[in-house]
Image (cartoon, rainbow, N blue to C red; front, top):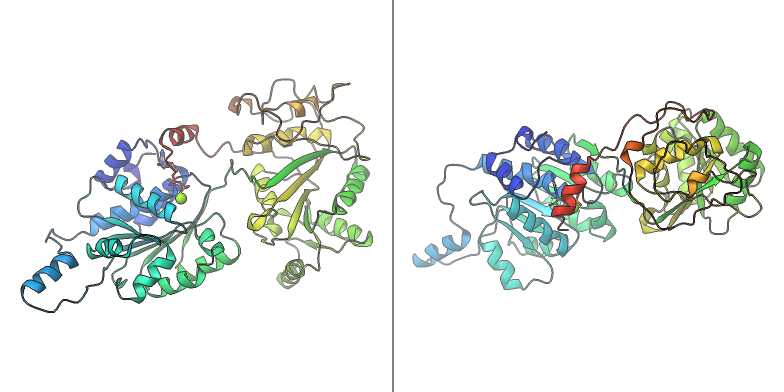
Length: 487
Ligand code: ADP
Ligand code: MG
């Protein structure tokens, strides 16, 4: 896949090639053709995945393709000058940008402007300017008087100019909201609504956000038309505010006792417990209720009304422990969820990432605990290989497993599978609890993909099938980022 193949104008391909981009990133490969085709986009993908080019390349392409015959565009400043020469009274002519990019911060706006200059370096007559708080007013007026095609702005300052008639959005074709979730976190929602309302209804809208859940999602759907939703599962989403642990258990009764203990933790506010099956979700929720927890089940067999009631009770804090299946719990955005417990491991590593993302919402800290037996060590390794993070095995006093954690757990290489790991599983006498933050040796070992249950360990229900995919982010891109990283 090349940039030409995405349908981009030759001048743009030349500029990105010069910037050292050889292949489009996954988000670019999906977003660029759709955006050239005029689709609205809702995109969530991790930081550093190349979102700026994902919206700016197709936008530049469209602006340059739509360019009419080169009747030299006269800037408002020139107009004003000749009007003055004709002895007319000069009113300020409002700038009429064709594209607007809203960003939460000045720094980000400047980054977007710089990237735009880079991507458009072989295009004539396309100007991008940033309108930012903190910039001297005369400077902003001077920038606007050049009638730039592309405006990159933070919402607050833009509103000021709009309200004083310095900007006219009647010719706007493309609206981009970059890091929309952060703009909402920063309280820009009213400003954004006002700006969006001032733009033509037939504009193309592209919204980028770390999450498309909750408030962002509902705004996103309000301001876009039949959007294409692009969500790139982030294998290396670090989830830095979420501590992850594995607790080894000997059997089901050990697992249940440990679960009850974890849910009594003082630091726990609300928790989501994940099970592999709907039946288990019901059974465990019942058992927890009898044990005195305010628990409720959530799964796909429940009627929508019942699901909504459960989610409302969770949001209101009446339910403290939600016992859920993967599909039912997708997208739950409740800030007080401090704990996620994997009672069963998910089938696919992507689901693990979605699960633990139910905690650590709104910038808070979270704890994600997986309760596993020794036979499941391989599944943990698959998850580690996917997230490129080690999940330390720890023990809770009074709940020590009879067998110590597999020796391989002490390996500080996430996913560093070596032949024989499975067989080493419980080497006697080996202390094996790695501490969180233990030093790492080596890196991500991509040749280590295990093929099926070769260790001879029995396969457990609910984890069969295994994980088919591999790292969705080719290494070549990671490498390129390191070379050209400028953010
Ligand atoms: P995001 O907005 O998703 O966080 P950016 O658009 O800021 O990501 O891009 C991150 C970095 O990756 C930048 O340094 C950018 O120049 C670089 N980059 C973007 N696309 C590519 C590509 N196709 N190949 C190599 N580097 C790229
Ligand atoms: Mg970005």
